[in-house]
Length: 382
Picture 1: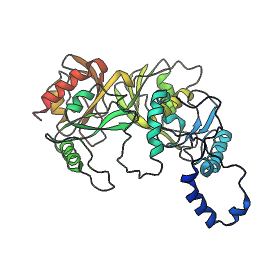
Picture 2 (picture 1 turned 90 degrees about the vertical axis):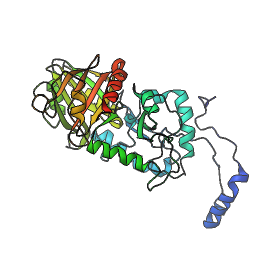
Picture 3 (picture 1 turned 90 degrees about the horizontal axis):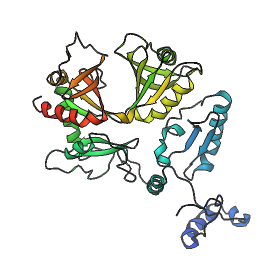
Picture 4 (picture 1 turned 120 degrees about the vertical axis):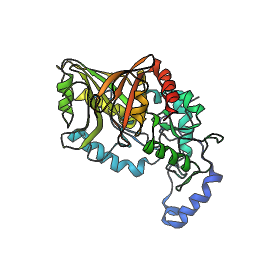
């Protein structure tokens, strides 16, 4: 039923039959310990986190509230380093090391849900001394964040991985095969040929890729352009309907975030960031917006399904589905514009991370499946 609220340093009865061989072995290695005497042999519960990494840093919700917790039974080993890191952070206003993997703001509010923690932490505890294969994904507390395309992708035999809680396809099994990992390994696994085929399709033809997990923030207001221009290393407040790729830097010139900023009009911008930096970006923009600035930041991630159409034939495919002119002259690289597909209106961004040519479709969630079905149906010809 959970840990009692007054249990803080409560103890559990030790399993001496299990522990004694290890204890005796340790005392034989350090004979002086046999004469030192043990005042208290402490046996109590430890705290574990959903991803087996510490929770460290300034809380996103409250300024000057610093946390160092969830040390996963290695608090004595890591305490000195984390103490020094936090001391520097408090005194200087920033950490002097890369804290991305342990920063408190990597977690999302739903991960404080009691059932989520109870389910996931049992698994992470069991992973402490197991091999951490690079492609292993958590098996517990899954299926709680699904994109609008999820059921369609499952029918296409997607193998779903955990991307900051989102169910995201890692690869697809061909017809007649089940999407299963036969054996975890550091080498090539059974799914590598399926993955290879996807890469060739993207390189030579066209693919549709679910990227709904990307964080999206609508930044509005009279001063939105000025504030985003100040926060961004690149100039982002140029012509409307323009996408700008940029970094956000701290006062020392070190990287805080890697984003795209799309200017829809003089008072509306969209900031897009990868899933792992979702809350960090939201916190950074809020804390670097002057109090007297007229700027409103809204997390709109859940409101859109993001379907990326990538590959050299992506323009041909999309042009067969829309009345908008997608020619290079009318719709050049880094353009963002509303287009029609089927009965839907959506934001089409001409940008790609796999090499030209490619587009991102940000579709209102309620119309996302409709657009997906039109794209896939037409895509069979390409």
